[in-house]
Length: 170
Image (cartoon, rainbow, N blue to C red; front, side, top):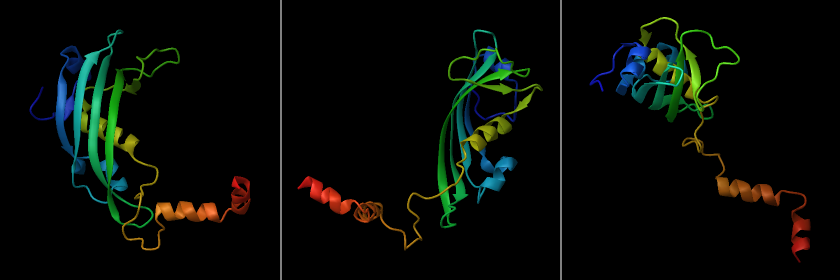
């Protein structure tokens, strides 16, 4: 295991050595991710293990953790979106064919050129973990938002069959 994460990796070499990469990368280094974030402060933490599968292809398994600063699309206030993503990749050096078998639970990732940017691989995983729309479960600045329990009670009582349900119970 390395003390600091390298910028460039050779997946096949790491897999043959059955190496592990554990550490963090600053979100500021991930330029494609910047448009989705409201701030680039923070880190992404990885814990990846490299190995070879039964067909002698490099695999990456592990996890990516991050707190992504995003804007809530309901109240437009900053929020932290937690990412805790499991990573399971088979590294291919060619485009996958239809009948190419992958280990169960793994996705194919085609990397033709070596060395490969570790930051780009981590950034790809974070982009895949982004929500379609980031919203708070309850917006802190929305004073007009109904509490969930009150909203459920009101929808039940506004039902036109509410009176009939009371008669049925009697």
